[in-house]
Length: 289
Image (cartoon, rainbow, N blue to C red; front, top):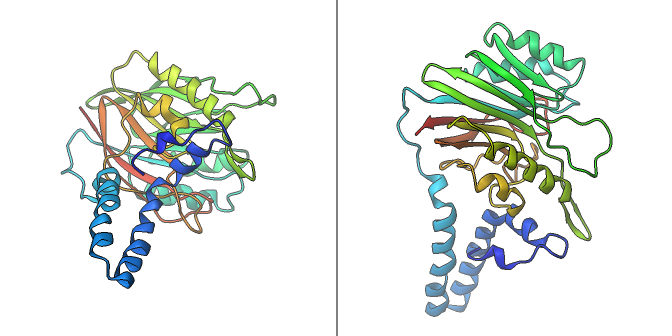
């Protein structure tokens, strides 16, 4: 837990695989506690303070309550709605019921795309869609364009990056919506090279963004501890409160649906109730700094 970077990525990307589930290593502590009690070892009990302290340092802050709301806050929802979602209208209504300012969606395909647009239109009159990603907003949007984050190994048509400007009452925000390539756990390790390349391209696009405040919403197919997302986490602030494990919906083990910000704080993130997707939606409060 203390030095995950010591695990190399050169073989099977084992470092990234460890980092994807880093928080769960804390479950070893109760097991070690039971063994220490069975042995009636005071030394073992004292030694347990080390992993407890490390876990608390790394993840304990996520358990603390969020700060008080700020009038400048943006409430945002991020959701991979799944291209096999059997109830797009119900999904759209559930997201709108949370009353966020922004709703970012991935895996938008026809004919479900038209259903999302129609259902969200009354409360979200502004929207931008590029490829299979989109953003719905209560505030005006301008300058929408695609962001090329397609890795070289993907040869078929593929468009999963969007950049637009949200004109909030407290200033303009550059909003990026992205869906990075999936990763797979195989016998040889973690297959994440396409995801890592896409993260690098997205990081370069954000680095060149001229607006001061930047918001990134997306299914990044990685946790914020995964070094494969370093081109993003080195430039953006992840959530400071909340675990919000979002995938898989049947047994959420990791938050791969992310809300990050530059020149702003993601004060708190949590999941919403399940929809027809294999991901849980996440909702976050973003405070400009």
